[in-house]
Structure formats: structure tokens, C-alpha cells
Length: 322
Image (cartoon, rainbow, N blue to C red):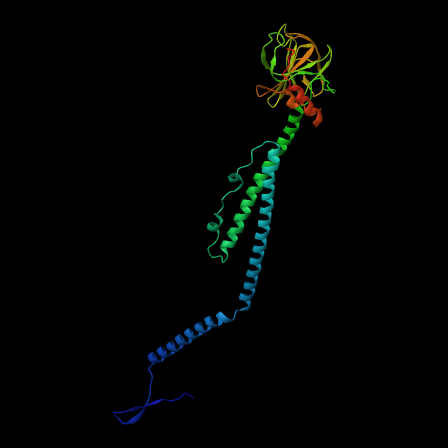
């Protein structure tokens, strides 16, 4: 039963019944509802600050797990970056040094990547973490691509190096086990005919006519000529890689022009043709168009003591044979 409210009327000095109009009743009801709503919202906010719903609790746990996974993935990426750095250092300081190749510039190995953060949704809580991880992955892919290309180049250089090592003149052109046949070395020597000091651009090996002459490295016969003077009968072998060898004063040839020869292959015999005072072989090495001391290349068929001995013999300023 609804309570009936009264009020005291000062004019009539009586208690009169309180009557509320429908408008006032609606306003009062709405006011009550508004206050209740404000109180409920405030209470809900306060509750949410201290108490999480089951769904929020699950999401928070998942977020922590994801963050942990991101941290572990970043650690793995850092480890891979460190391993790539070791491979890069070994590539530049070992492999490329051995094969005489320039190291790869650091600017080519490293790229700047900072575009992922702009592409990610701004609503993500850990936008920075995701962007950093994606940047690392992009840099890693670039480094792997550069290193893979470098190794392809190293393989080519290795194959080329093997060919080069076989082509470089590295043995004496005639058998000289006793080291007694080196008659004159590279440098200023007394000319046997003009009797004045002239530059002797090779080494003279004294030997009987018909002594075998061998190619000192792999190559192609480029010159095969017979001259009445100068070098006389001569052979030139183009070894590639800037190396050419010359064999002069020969008696006979065992090869043809354009023929490919291997190191140690018989190419001719010792003679006394051209401007020569005795049977011997005049041997020259030309590197990139410049005649160099052949003795410095006699390293493959001599031990250290023998090499030291032949260096001493070649340094004697005696008379050349041509």
C-alpha cells in the first residue's frame, strides 16, 4: 500500500495531502535513474581497476605469453646475427685474403630498415616490439643473401685459384738437382760479346745440347720462332693471369704453336742458336709485361736449403752466356 504524504499548510493551518503531478513524478524518476546509472558506472570502473573479468585475465595471460615468445624470438635472431657476423669476418679476413679479393663493404652488408612501425596498426600495445622484430628479420635476410652471393664468388675464385696455381711458373725449366747448371742470374751482368755490363733479363742454365727443357707452368704456346740472331730458336708460353715465359737458344722444338702444355711437359731441347757463346738455355719470366727475376719462382721443386743456395748462385755478378 503506497504511503500517503501530507504537508502543513500555513494558510489554512491544516495538514493537506501532498499531490504530485505526473510531470514531477517523471522528472523525479529520471533523476533517480540518472544518479543510479552514474553510481553504477563509477562502481564498475572502480571494480575493473581492482578486479579483472575471467576474459580479461585470459587475455592478459596470453599477452604475457606472446611477449615472452617475442623476446625469445628476438634472442634467437640476435644469436643468428652474431653467427652471421662471424661468417662475415671469416669471409673478409680469411677467404678473401687467401684468394686476393677485396672485402665486401660494410654498407653493402648492412641496410637500414625502419618502415615496419609505420605499417603496423597503431592500436597494438607492443607495436615497437613487433616492428623491431620484423626489422631484425629483414636485416638478417639481407645479410644472408649478401653472404650467399659472396660464397658463390669465393667458389669461383677457388676454382680460378687452382687453375692459377697450376699456371704460375714454379719450377726450373731443366733438370738441375745438383744446382750446378745455373750459370748466370737476373740483373746487371757482363755481356759475353760486348764485354760491358748490360741488364740480363733472365737466367742462363748451362747444359749439353739436347738436354730436355720443360714447361714451368700450364699454358699455351704463343711464340715458336727460329731466329739467326738474338734469342735464336725460342718458345713463349702464355700462362694467363699475366704470366709469360720465354725459352731461348733452343736446338729443337717438341711442341707446336697454339698447343696447350702442362707444367713439367717436354717442350724442346737445349741448343746454341742465336746470339749465344755456348750451349745453354736462356729463361725469362714476364709478369704483366715486366721481366722479373725467375729465381724467385723456383719454389715448387726446391726445399728451403736448396732455394737459399740457388738464390746465392743467382746473385753472383758474373758473365752471362747471351
